[in-house]
Length: 360
Image (tube, rainbow, N blue to C red; front, top):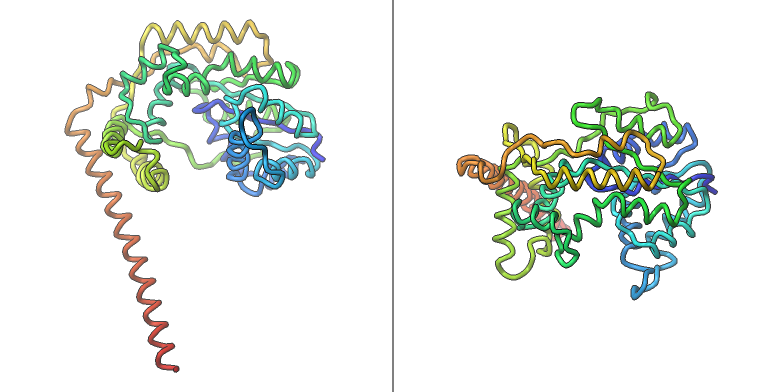
């Protein structure tokens, strides 16, 4: 059985993809130190957390004893040494779900919450929301986040994932303060390896023993974000949210954006420098400090600093047109490649039929 389980719960946009990629790409090196990155692949962790999110809570169907969550738990509990789970969808879980997690895992449970300053995260979360189908404008997003109105889906989603003090208190109350750590994301300009060095400290590892040349989770530029937001608005005109359209995640989020438009260079970046953000971020740090959690890094790194960039209104029509045309070219290329593969399959099928007919 696992002697220790390190549960990295997020938050979103706090270097989670980098940590997950380092863990996934260094499975053999981790195993040499008695550490396993749970599941055969990281998608097993995603499926398990999605299963846990949808089942087992009040007014939810029960968890399937053979479902993804239980399979991951069984794998962790049966594997000696230390198991690591890194899944940012865990951070917003409420107390009943946290208790399920705590009670299911037999090894010593240590929970790590990574956090980044509020200014960088507001900008990053809006850009991420656009890639996930949102048609909310930047100004609308800012207003919703500032309101903290739980009736607003935008505000509720943002603070569920970015209310660090609330998340920390809830998890610490269930697992115990001695089993909970806040890890801060280094400020812009810090060494690219520092985040891993901090996570390695939690794992009690020498960070230099691991390969850090992993795929980056790059962000889209502002012209691309505006274009995608407009696309989402058009797709939603039939009354169905863009993200609910079949294959949106595959075609728009992944093939168009993450494998295409993120590579665009020379785009303007989204800026944010508002007094209320600085004040609200400072209040979050004050609350975390008062709660007295173990900290790897420095809580002062969570104090917001102005994010250099511009407002979407300052992006020219020409810049937006360039992004739109590159998006159109990308989707045309994907369609041509798929059509070519389809026709190749048809030719092979027809050739087999002719061969079978000749042999009859």
